[in-house]
Length: 198
Image 1 (cartoon, one colour):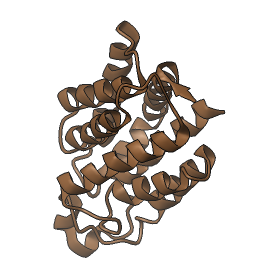
Image 2 (cartoon, rainbow, N blue to C red; image 1 turned 180 degrees about the vertical axis):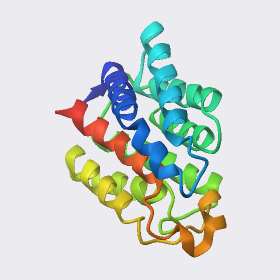
Image 3 (cartoon, rainbow, N blue to C red; image 1 turned 45 degrees about the horizontal axis):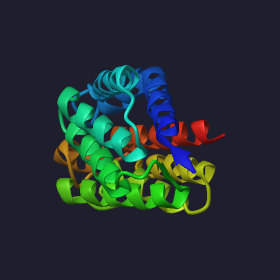
């Protein structure tokens, strides 16, 4: 079973890997976006860690809800609302249980990913974060490592896609050949989850 401390460790590990990969995320965002994804995510998850360390939430659902709220208030562009909505919706789905199973986490994240699709009006194949989130959540049924691998493969699979949503869609065929930065940062969240589950 996974308690609030596990979820705090997940957010901390996510912040660490995003910090390490911030330059790469921004580099990926440069040709097809605003060239600020790495810095935005870095700022947002740094704020999340400070918040959960200062006042640790009591339940897994509360950790994700608070993290989502923090991302919405501290991350600019589309990333803040999208990641914030995902985590808040997942946290709400987990409710007030003091511990949750891996299957309950998977169900909660699935609800969060659905909310991202609704908010962005997007679906897998549109070259967005959903291309990593959806396979990652599906593979959680197998294991945390499988989820991380599936999310990473999903992010890489965005390279030959033409963007149909978001700023990159304005580039049309010129968006082909670039890995989506949102899918890449989504894969990092699953990598952090697998890391803390070991």
